[in-house]
Image (cartoon, rainbow, N blue to C red; front, side, top):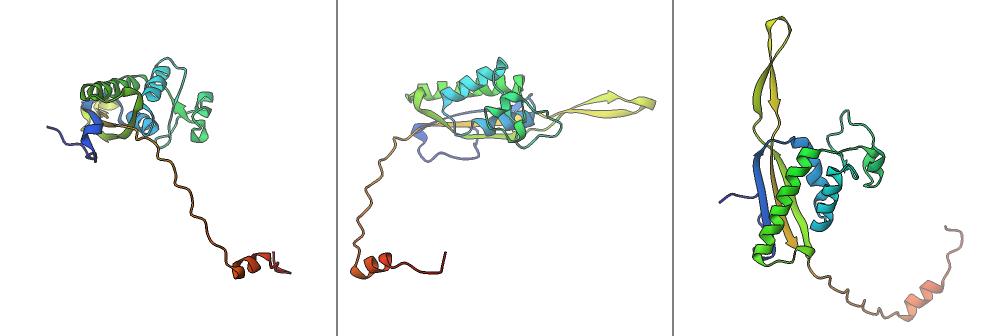
Length: 185
């Protein structure tokens, strides 16, 4: 059995999915996971499908070096309108998310109420290749794979807020509220 970085408080109400040594860019996966964390699963799947069709963008927040601005990033309120369409990473993440939903259905959870509670991406050991450079030299040519883990949970029913207790106002407090201080803002 594999270890997850967090263990849910109520395992019966959660479902998990993970992938190790996935040959997709770590940085792309990190941005996708960061954006979808806390989202409703159906909404996240719809957004990921739109990314694959180039109708929506994944906002890039942390790894933004050399990434251009996109008009679609305004829809996500991306800082600086910076975003991309990481197709391969999105497809892999979407498959993992669908697997987590299938695991939830097996457990008897309602897929409509599932929320992405935990989405984490770690760097995997790089795949090392080499490229041939000028003057007979050899340079490194490494891939940056990723480990991805997703935990879904059923959203809890909202609890109504209790009515605030009435505060009894004393005569002194009422008098102080009537008093107007002169000369101070």
